[in-house]
Length: 142
Image 1 (cartoon, rainbow, N blue to C red):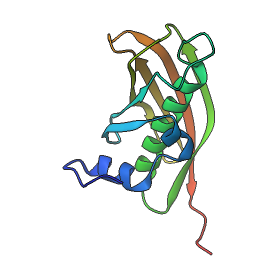
Image 2 (image 1 turned 90 degrees about the vertical axis):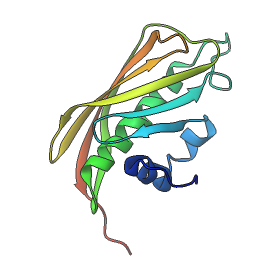
Image 3 (image 1 turned 180 degrees about the vertical axis):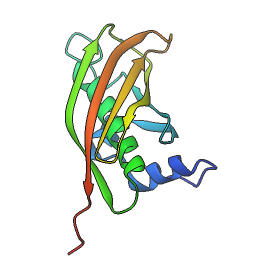
């Protein structure tokens, strides 16, 4: 866990954590709110055998941002869970860091849709991910 910032959304995301897979892949939150969330991930360690960023790595970045953003929107006592995700890869990063920018397409009471645009260090779009999350009541603590 990192220290407290002046960004309440980023503090919320940092306190909640991003999950073991995203942590292993080096995902780092940069900005976090219902309207816009940003995270980075290194290319190194997340490549295919030929040295290109793995398409699944783009999807992990997108799903992490979209699901976490949907959970922030859901609010206390509610839980957002992914029900659909798709990705279109248009470029392959080979080094440096990729950046995912997540923005809402729809923020409803029971469904959210987010688009995540992943770019390389030169600002070139590498992947476009869309995720739909269903919002439901969180399970009661046992």
